[in-house]
Structure formats: C-alpha cells, structure tokens
Amino acid sequence: MKTKIFILGLLAAVLAMGFAAGDALANGAITGSVIDADGEPVAGAIVSIMGQAHQRGERPFRVRLETNENGTFGVRDVPAGRYGITAGAREVGMARVRAAVQDGEVTEVELQLQGRGGRGGGDDEERPEPGSVVGQVVNADGEPVAGAIVALVSLERRNHRGRHRGMRTRTAEDGTFSFENAPAGNYRAMAWARGVGRARADLEVVAGEETEVDLTLQGR
Image (cartoon, rainbow, N blue to C red; front, side, top):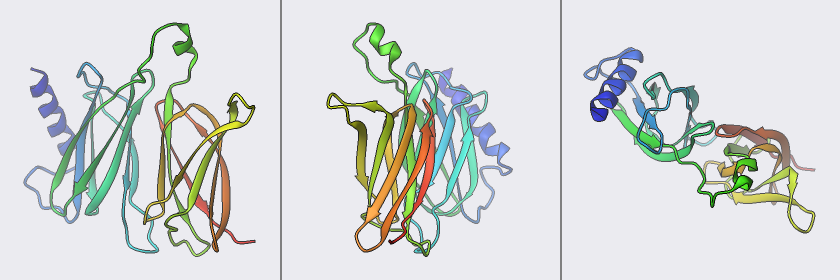
C-alpha cells in the first residue's frame, strides 16, 4: 500500500510540472519523494537542488522548493549534468543524494530523512538540530575558483580553549562547496585563494534547512 501511495505521489508531481511521462523534454527533469525514518511521507520538507558542474563563467543550476502533501516534489527544465539534492525538515532530519540528469528524461530520487543519533538524556534536547551550508566561490570576474579554502566559523559556539568552533573545506572544480550537519546558529563564512583574494559573509543556519551563500574573492 505504501509503495502505491508513493507511485501515485510521484505521478502527481510529474503531472504538476505540466507534462506527462511520454512528453518530449528539451532538458531533463527531477521528481522525488521525501520520507521519514519510518518510511512515511514528509510534507513541507525543504528540498534544494544544486548543479555540481557547469560551463566556465556560468553559475550552476539551483532551485529550492517544498514537498507537497504527499511528500513529493518535481522540477522540470533541468539541464543535463550531475546534481546534489538535499532535503530537510525540522524535528525530522536531513538527507542528501546525488543524481545524474539526462536530456529528455525524468530522474526519480528518494530521500529518507535521518536525525542525529543520540545517547539519550536531556542534553540531546538542548542541542540544536543541524542544518547545512552550500555555495560557490568566484573571482572578481565571476569565474569559479577551484581549490579555494572555505571556513565556516560559529559566532556563538566555542571549544574548550575558548576559540570559536569552525569547519573547513576546499571548493570543487566548479567553485562549489558544502558543509553538512552545521548546528543552527550564526556563522561567518570566509574564503581565500592565493593570488586571487579573500571574501567573507555572515549568515544564519536554520535547523533542518539549507543555507546558500556565494563568496566573491577580492584582492588587496
């Protein structure tokens, strides 16, 4: 019965995008369902779709939407390529999958939300649920910067030495980056690359949601 519900939900998502399964598509499309740990549909979950590669000087495809009452979603006119798809819902959890889209085809995905595993006790209830941060680093001409260092530093949380807690990563070939499982709160995102410049931006991470931030490196 549950499988039938999801099939009907995905069909509704496809029809809601304005085309039937047999229609020709200039680009591709993505449809999917978001479920909780018990396999039940999650309505109102935030879904973010971000392209993982693109032509030099062009910004990657991005879209942000919510699941419908059946826990499904759909996006049409998606350029062919690889995508990272993130879903989250407050008090339910987060999930992330990668998918490939081809011209003229509909790609179907399923994201099962999972909360952070706890050991029990009142301390778990006081910890903020995680969110995520994604973005792109570009130079002054708007071109993506590969291999740039990106740091996400909490403006509220400190370690045992009194220093602000943070995370660090490097950008991919298309200048994109992501931080998963970032506790809700206020942060400063900083990026730098030798011979290119530096950038920073303040942002807020919301529990169960994805925050986007773009950083433009500027030389001294």
